[in-house]
Length: 398
Image (cartoon, rainbow, N blue to C red; front, side):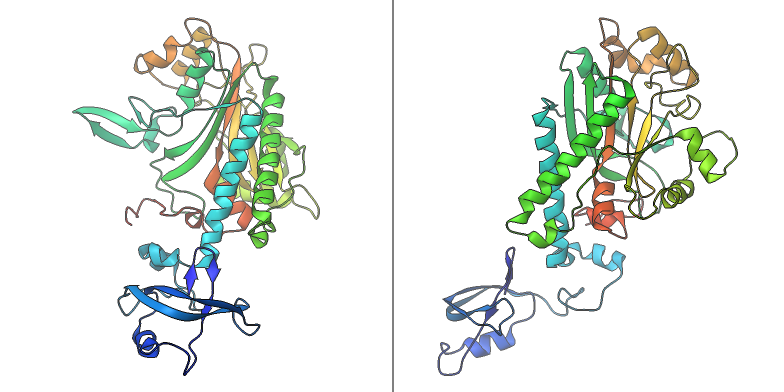
């Protein structure tokens, strides 16, 4: 028998088990649901070291046969088959472990943020405009008006800085209409976002992110240790500070020519390999992104003394991008100029821009991919395995 705590053996002994139990269980299909009342005794040869001698047996639900997916079979099914029959797939104890780790990590992040006086908030997921625009927006009909699913809570995080909240975070779904059929992309994902007023520049934001990440993992490992030590052992001790490498130095290390745009996914992967000698910290920051690379990120601050450069940074783990952030532009006039340069019509952002008209403190923040982080820490081959019911460009069910 299996439940959420593990597996236990139910043993029927001739002359001891109540009449009919042998016939009932022999005819019962695998994965059926039963209720057993009995006496628990030590049994060194049993699977879990104990066995139950049943005195009462009730069949609660009979599973159909054949099963479309094996639960205890040693032969692994293809991922698409597993996701088609996800409820059966999730009955596997090792998969439950993935989501126990996920829950522990989210608890760790919340604990770390609250310890630093961040307020947890919830921002709208139905929007009149997107934070980044473009083809990655999911468009929908909202009472005969166009609306979009939120790509991130970016604009609302900044508006809350103008409201005087000063430190906020959110853990919530976000949506990207990207036709990326890769092992690291989803159309619905969980984003951990934070924003703070009066940061100590880009470096202060990076230090905040790495400290929160280190503490969250430590808290998760501690919470799992008592009941699930085998899961706690999967979480590393995160060493800080994380190394930093400027964007220009990344291109130099990769030997790629100067060109427009960010690093490609393949270049990010190669960089991770170059930066991963024995004993190196698997976490690292890519810093000092050029304004040209962040042109569409109109809310990124461009220092007046060096407008070709931003303080933006990415956090990566062995070549996998986990987070992006930096100081925001608090000045309304410069923000409008950034929007114009990015080809964004300010008229569609009236509510957002109003927050900058009546006093906006200097602020900055970051967005962090929870699903990718879980994939990286547990070595999952596909990001779809980090979500209970993943969504990509092909999958809307179950």
